[in-house]
Amino acid sequence: MGNYFELSVANFVMDTGRALPDYTLVPFLASDRISGDDPSSDPPQCYSAEARVIAQRLDLLGFSIAAARAMLPTSLSRLSTQPQLCPPSLAGADSFEQWLEAVRLILDHYRVHDYDAFDELDDERVRFLTAYSEEHILGFPRQSPELGEH
Image (cartoon, rainbow, N blue to C red):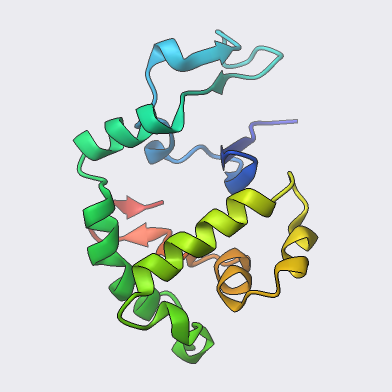
């Protein structure tokens, strides 16, 4: 069967795979583990913490809203070999606010593993940000020169 990981925010699955990337557990503490004390145990290990707690921890590590706001335009311009696919609303002066609004729509409408739920939104930002890509997760690169591969 092998290893498998799933990283989600609310019910939205952000990333999945076989090998858990080093960055995945950075904002969690051992006390956040809610099941599976043994990595080979069944049920599997599960970590959970309130969003505000994770946000505070990430902020302390330098992953802040201000840093995301500054990084988004560069990320969007680099994430695709076809930048014309990026919706104009995500390329404008208020691109970060547009991105936040789209992410909120995603989190409000997503049902676990049901990407068809986004069709009802008819929102080009949501379609763009949720399209599967080896390059990005919600518009931010999976690989960053500063952080290594994500």
